[in-house]
Each structure stands twice: as structure tokens, then as C-alpha cells.
Length: 440
Image (cartoon, rainbow, N blue to C red; front, side, top):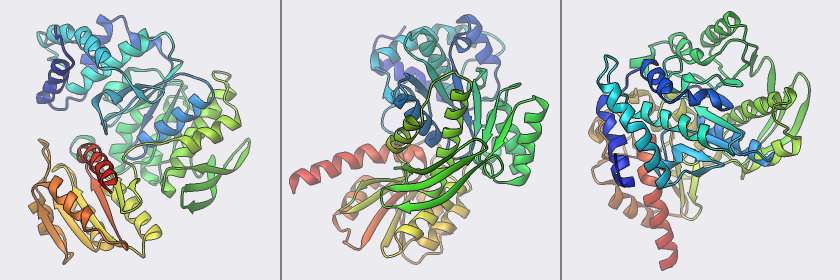
């Protein structure tokens, strides 16, 4: 038994020593011990490579606007650990984390004595979320973001009302496979029999894999570009405007505050899920709730403008597809700016392609080290980049402070890469910028 929140976090994070262990056997064992809380909640399952968190944010905001109490399970966190388990966007309390730890900790001890071995950190947190939401009397629906892959992911214990697969890219290839088709097979593992699946997958080989799996399971299949369409897209200063066309209706002049053409695709997925829940009379969701919910939706660390003057943006572009999107938006929106990019990544990422794309848009590149077990070294990035104006930085905090102080009116600072890095940078910068404003 642990007695403080700090001890609870230390125990949870201590499970990281077990690494990643794909498979559902340990989750099945724990759920059986807890009388299967995962079967007692209404859920939507959201997988994919990029866009999972944003799609969760759009759908949560729509459902909240319709008057429902919405749980979310997401990863990793940006500002505080507790946000991984949230209700209506509000992270659960320190006391609730402590209470949940004392529910799961004894089970973890018993499990370690079996041939299955002890649960990983992610399995522990997932089990906590199932138990928490099942015991919470006011939660109407829970949106579950897949952690890694899908087929063998801990969250795949649920039987959702509807499933979503966002776009697919070559990420976590050492675990999920080297090709789009292999990765799509893992992602398609969240599809359940006769349960609708909505997807924004573009790669034809990956799409065929998902479609075949849906057919095997008699799951109604809906794909962006075939069954629903984003039309008349326009980027505006405050976000994006677009029209969604489906087989049954057209919603014109939809507005979102999250920046990027790709966010219109994530929003489209969220709208289609909301419309399905309404059509099946599972949840009453009006068109006004959709429109207002979309506009109010926010997801931290995704092309997030922390400051207008000086212009500072953070973006958790942690893989090749994410960097491609970031580079596109910077080129489209800020071609008149001198762009200084600060980048950090994990060593299991294919960062050579990522750096090559950053080279194309940056006037200056700063590669930084940060304290994380899987973090790659800044010196490695420096060797790959072909940009003349580049530097490797060991201590990123004083470096960012100095660069912000020296940032000119025609320049901008973009901090990107690993979400683990972004989760350290954001609170630090928010505090620094706040104090800077006060001092002025």
C-alpha cells in the first residue's frame, strides 16, 4: 500500500523498467480479478498513427456540448500525469490516482508471481482507467486512445460502440512492422464484429488491409474520400474552415480552432462518429452541438501558439508524417518569417527523414538533449542535418530563455519533436513567458 501521491507516481513509473510487452493476457487476468469493469462502460476506440489525440478532443468537445459527461484516456500527457484519465477535459485528482494505485498494486504483485509476469506501466494505467470509469456514476461515455498499435494494445479489452482509425504512418516499426500494410494489420486489430469503423487512412495498401479486416468481422466500413468528404477547405488565422459531405447530409462552413488541414480530417472523423451515435439513438447530438463543440475543441502541444509576440509555437511532431504536416503549415502560413526550429527526438525514431524535411523550411536548427531514457543525442542530429546554421545544445532551458530574449520581430521559434520533450517544454515556457510579461 502507498500513502502519498508521490509514492503512487513512483510506483507507476517504476513499471517502465518492464518496457513494452504487447499482448492482452495480463490485462485479461487483471480484468477478471476486478470483475471486468471494461464491460460496464460505453466506449469509442480511437487508433492510428497521427491524429488520435486531436480526434478525441473534437469528439469529446462535441459530446460535452451535447450535455454528456465524457471520460477520456489518452497518452502521453503534456502538462501533468493525471490528465491521462480525465472527465470533461479535467484530469482526475491526486487522491484518485492514489486510490487507484492501491487497487491495482496488490493485483500487480500477484500477477508477478504467475508465468505471465508483472504488468507494464501502460497496462497498470489502462487497468486504473477501466476501474475508475466503471465506478464513476456520472460518466456517460469514455473515449479510449490506443497506446501502441491496436491488436495487442492494452486498451483493446473494450467492446466499443464505434471504432476509429486515423491516418497511418511508419512509426514504431521495430514493434509494429516495416510496411504500411503490416502496421495497418496491427491498427485494424481494434475492429470488432459488426461494429462500425471510420477511417481517414490514405495509403491504399493500408486501407485495403483495414477494409479486409472489417469485411471479415462484418463491420460497416466508412472511409474519408469514399463515404464522407472534406470540401471547400480554407485556412484562416484562427484555424480552419471546411464543409463535410456525407451520404445523408452536408454541413457547410464548419470552423475549428486547431491549425492545419489535417485537423479537418480528424474533425470529420469525430463528426461522423457523433452522427452515428445520434442516428442509432444512443446519444442525442444536435448540429449546433457539433458546430460549437468543433470550434471549442483544443488539444495541447499540436501546433499550439504559446505566444504571439514573440511568436512561439510548440508542436509534438514526433514522426515523419507529423514533421511533414508541420513543415507544410510553416511554409503555408509563415513563409515571410525567419524560422528557428528547436528539435528533440527519441532514438527509436527514423529521425534522418524528419531532419531532412526540417532542413527545407528552417533558417536555423537547434538540436537539444533532454532527460529521458530513450532520448537520442543532439550530436547525432547535428551530423545528419545539411543546414549550415545549426547547433547542438546540452542544456535546453537556459538556451530557450536566451533565444526568446533575442527573437526579432520578423522571426519565430518553433519547438518540436518528441511529445515527452514537449511535455517538459510547455510548462517551463508558459511559466517563463508569464514572468516575462509581468516584468514588462
